Image (tube, rainbow over all chains, first blue to last red; front, side, top):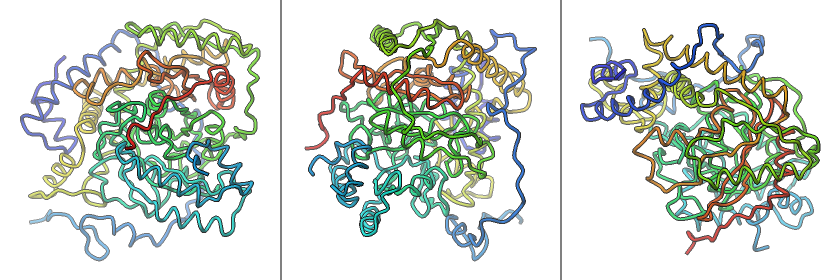
Length: 95
Length: 485
């Protein structure tokens, strides 16, 4: 298989990373060589293998739903690139 | 005491406990040496004046019952430290000040240690040479323009150069063990679930583990004992009985069965690595252990599996960097444009590459062919280890297929860079503990490491084997302080 520029443009949209033509070409080259390497997995028959989703064979523990961390609003907002009182500010989304 | 920075962690603790030196003297000594070592570029953030204040405070009323009494140390910049900038080596987190502390670092401060600063690493821990960091490459103290390994490259370099007595790194595919091997230091990747992931900037959550890095096995065991804990803030943290790893450390490994996997004899492996491995086998035999040939038949499929699983998880984890709540933001014409420019300008090339791979393998129509396939092969890889551990107690392999390479040597070829992790990646995929110890030098005088892989939760056993081997190997790091004028 081969990843073309159209696919790169599609993935870049999905991952919300803008790419120009030059970067897209470089990415296509890189991804093709990486996928060539990944294709090795097709040598293996895996129809009857259960997928491994977690190495830790434990069930999730339950805990009571209590607030343990409070009054952090100010500290959290402070890390925002743009804020207005208690809100994060983003570019206008409604005309 | 002029040679404070040359002392091991155990020696420093002993001297502080016997009041032969103060925490302030120790802290100042490491800071002074760090100031002279800027060329190595190990620090992203220095917190030196605060460290001295904390050391003075410790000395006023020293609690000598703690495990790390007044010991200064720097940590990888992937651990969130409350009120101290945490970047993950990325432009996108260049100005991020966490309002909370990671559990692993909190465990360290609770035992009396003092933060010196935050250490350079590959961006979001994605890299094997520390060259993907937004804050520049790190020099390996072994030789000029040599990579220190990665992603915990600032950590390995800082320990080898004696700028910190010990440190912590994180290991997703080899990021503790490979840099330890490249710098002649000891690095342990614990069992998945042993150390809490809370407050560690996430890369690939089913593989990420924090672990200790030190100059010798005993120091490594002590630090591991401090950082390993059950934590309800990490849903994959495992509640099991943890040992007093340093207290229970023994060099008696008589009768232990050590497996040698034939599939680790990879094509093109340098003869000096093969020789080192043979030497390692002789050392464990000398210690009274028994050598057993084993097979891990799916070894060759580990890297391709890793390069599906890790980028897939990374693409999901890194979706949170959108320029809204924290971190860098680029200007855009509208919301979507702002997201796309922020992520394009904020992430470096390797991170973008991996997000793209991950997004692709998870995208509609490809999920079964790639991600599901990789999860199935991951199961086969884990089964290989389960089968092997019916016959052996631990497995001995080289840590890396080569010694450290030059800065810039492999940056243009991602696949050749990925091959660095060929011996370490299977361990993460199976969630097992692995330790790298320095075992010899190549013809250039660069260090080479051997890796001991254990059963899940059997850190004590691999620490013991490493401890016994360390005594036989008697490794001396060749460091000339070339970077200090």
